Length: 481
Image 1 (cartoon, helix red, strand yellow):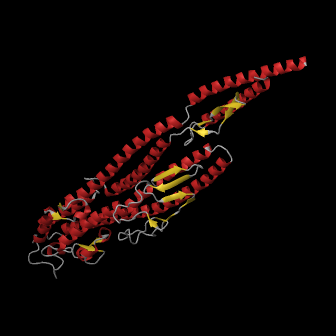
Image 2 (cartoon, rainbow, N blue to C red):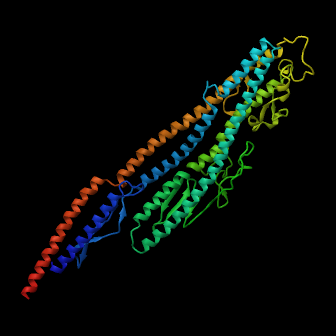
Image 3 (cartoon, rainbow, N blue to C red):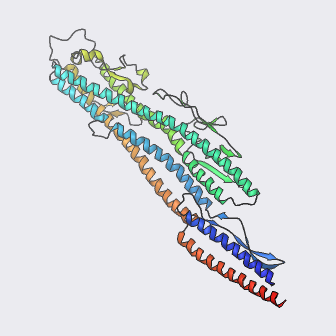
């Protein structure tokens, strides 16, 4: 080997070690940076005329496990979905109270029943009559407030859908721009490792909003679809469309007055076949918000409406009839059950003429002949102790007393929230395990990097000594010449 070739080899070694030291420094400085992956540079022997002439460096690459990344992103979608549902149900449970709470729905029903027991003992007592009215108003207010809480959460879910769609569109646009930069860098023979790190962070955020599938083309571009195969990004971003409703009322429903999210004219919430739940968006925050708006929260409203409706009808069906509750001041119409819990009110005629609790709302005048007649109050007591039939569409069951229904309703909400919380905890544990594995494979191990730094420093010093020795030999040859 000539001295010139030896010098070239040593200099290439110096350059390789310089690049290696630079990469180690970058790795160590970004060891705690979220989404950063360990960078390495491949080295191959440099051949000149079939003989070794040093080392040749490739492009800086990332050390990543694509399969683990996919599993982590699937976990992020599931956790975001469950976390959103858990958050909403937690606040719903807080407003509904727990079984046995003084402010719970079941307790309000029980207090109304107890007030009628007191009235049955003294039907002529104005004090007992006023207590019944107070307890009836308390129950109506409780139902109103709970119904309002449900609709407030539905409105929040509607706004959340709009927010999620905006985030998805923004992330798709960002990834589209990164795709263009990666293609340009590849064409110029430059490393795309750092750009791919940025792209990964965007994919992580996108996965939280909507479940995705994706693959990388030979030119470095990422193509993204929904879990069901709808194209979100293929060269250009396909933007989602959503028209949010200004107000979500109890009668607002999807499909109908509430809109779905569309892409290229396809409704992702209710793609064919038209069978709830939605078929095109199965995970991520967007799916959870749609499920809350269109299924979970309307079911809670239906359960409240059913209790208010059946109780109102049972009072009206007594002999003599007692129209204790009304629909916002008008006689209740069984065909108008949707949202009734928000509108139920105590009949103001009964409030102003409390003797009707004893004589019924059909009586023309108060009973002055037998003012201590407790027939109607006792019939109400029997009504409260009797098992009533409720609609099976509530999901609670069909046979309950009113107090049992109220307690079951509250318990159902608590159990639903607990189930969501347990599923979220399990998913987070899975995600933590997957993230730990991914970090172990693609993250930066500072101890490993510092050990490599020592090796590079030693190699750099060795190559420097070779360069120095060659210089001395060249100087000696020049002196001889």
